[in-house]
Image 1 (tube, rainbow, N blue to C red):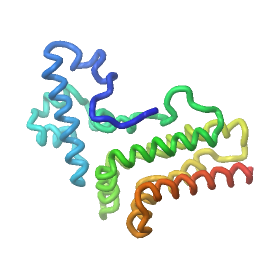
Image 2 (cartoon, one colour):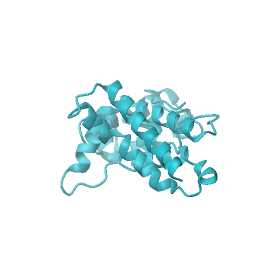
Image 3 (cartoon, rainbow, N blue to C red):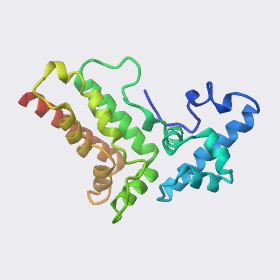
Image 4 (cartoon, rainbow, N blue to C red):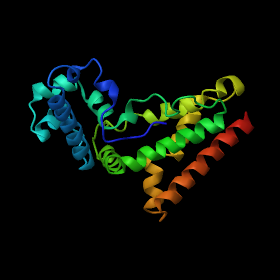
Length: 208
């Protein structure tokens, strides 16, 4: 299973700038940049690598040695954002089980990074706002991967369109509504989203 964590993915260390010479100091510098990004995003910002460097008290040139672009920094701070799939190792072949696992992992991501995700949602709703880094459509890809077996078993289903419907039923937007206007607790909100998403899948399979 894929879960968020406070440490950095091992893949960022192997063969990278941090892997040679003064590795302890480099690892601390790298972690300082990651922590700064998380703080800034929780405060509602969508910072560049330069902004993160300034917040961490690290030179811009040094920051770019660790992270050549914002996407690589985001993936280090929130590892799931770099994942094509949330199914983990040995994914099930049954599409319902695949969706169930993906939903659980998506909800774990929301739990772990709720302040940052709420901030990104607010930023994306501001007039004239661009697309914050956390609003990149990754969850639709996660659901497309969960639904992949339908290409062989239910050829009449448009997997992408179904993934979009599932994303509309399960994500930070319905979570905010359910826990805010709906008055549900977090666990109740996640249960409602899972029930709705599975109902959508079953209806699509019956219709096909």
